[in-house]
Amino acid sequence: MHRLIPSLQTTAKTVTSPLHDLTRCAASSLHTSAASLRASSSEYPPPNLSRAATADLCDVFHPEDVDVITPNKQMSIVDPGMNFRDYGGLKRFSGTISTIKTYENNPLVRAALSEPGNGRVLVVDGGGSLRCALLGDNLAEIGATNGWHGVVINGCVRDAEDIARMDIGVKALNTHPLKSSKRDPGLRDVPVTFGGVTFTPGEFISADHDGIIVAPETLTL
Image (spheres, rainbow, N blue to C red):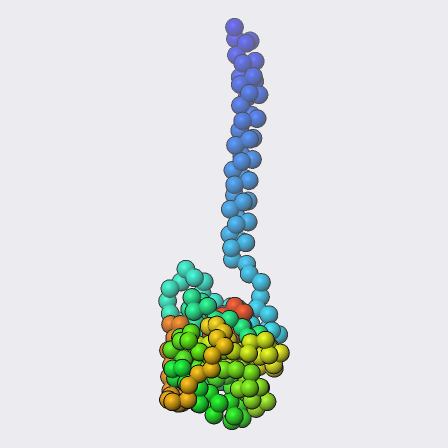
């Protein structure tokens, strides 16, 4: 009987050893997967300094992700629910902000675009009206010729097909074939607010397919 005990002990070890190895293997695999997940969640492609897109500017000047709710003092992002569309030949543009506040009237839009733009961006708060256009091909061409980098309109444009061939960025809510009125010029170079962001003359704006960002100072990469 005494001779059988060592044999039984050996058999027990033989039976339990594969199970033990399987448990260790599973634990090791789980640890590796968790480590890989942590690595993949913390590693992002570096910003593309050459293109200076809104996404790249966010990566540098707004490094916090969406889980961090602390307001970022370096930039504001226009609510994408505004559904701005691109109409100009330039799909990415930026510059110093100049503003107009008006409603279904565009005399000041013509006056502003007739000035030297010097790479500025004209932000027109048209009150979100979808009843007429505040910019057409003639004014867009004037702006492009005078060195404006872009126009952002909280309202509509027309002559979209022609504007798409011009060397100027244009964002607007939609198109409308009807021209606007001339009865009330509006206000020039005052702070205007839409899309959850205040556009202040002299501040910086950058726009592309991904959205529109505004900052107190020029953002460069």
